[in-house]
Image 1: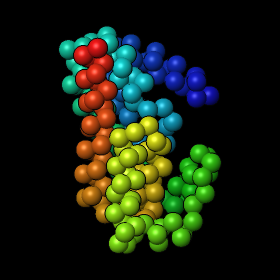
Image 2: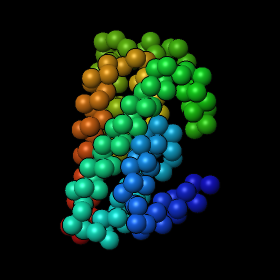
Image 3: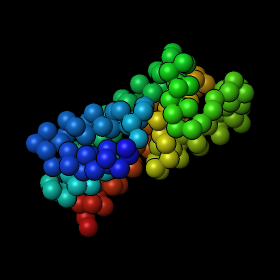
Image 4: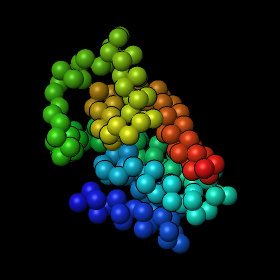
Length: 162
């Protein structure tokens, strides 16, 4: 299933409405879709190098909006959040929430969220988890903008350059 979705994303990158598809893909990847936007960013930049900034900006904006949706799922829709965790083979517990809401746990969560936003780690699980533990929303938004922006602009720039 994942291979078919991956192949489909590469095909979509060549479509007339690729930017709109990228926006949708970046949004849903931050909350439940398994394929990262990079899969579309790279072929899109290769085909239209002059638009690498716009492509990265679209991916960043909609990824952050999708992250907010993931946060909302965790914050307000616990049953759905737990089903998403189970789909990816993880288990959620209340001890998890208690561990990351105060003191050193809060600082540790900052680091975990930063790592997940910048790397290919499953970002959607961290966005949902951030909502579940009621992580500070302003900090969450800031980290999402910085990490997703760095990641997508770096991918787009390196594709543009090389």
